[in-house]
Length: 98
Image (cartoon, rainbow, N blue to C red; front, side, top):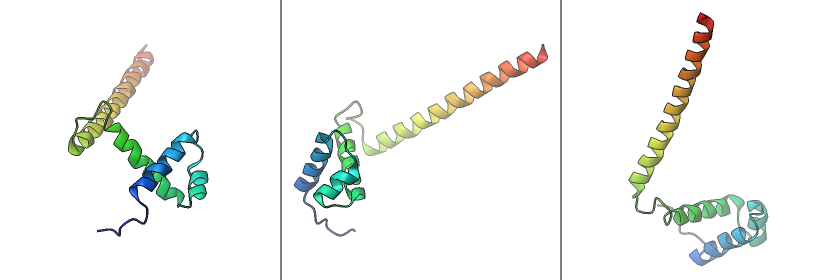
C-alpha cells in the first residue's frame, strides 16, 4: 500500500483544469508554475483523461472488458497488417511468374 498523497483531490482537479485551459502548454511549464513534479502532473492528466473516457462510447464496460477490447483491437490491427503483407507478397510473386 502506498503512502497517502500530500495533494488533495481538489488540487489535482484544479491542476488538470489549469493544464487543459492553457491550450495544452507544456506539462513541465504548468507543473513548475504550480510547484509539482511534471511526471506527477502528467499522471494526473492521464487519470483524468481515462476518467473522462468512462463517459464516452465505452462507458458501460468494466475494467476487464475494456482491457479485453484493447487486446482484441490490437490483435485485429496485427491481422490486418499480416493480411496486407501476404497480399503484397502474392502480387510480387505473380509478377515474377510472368
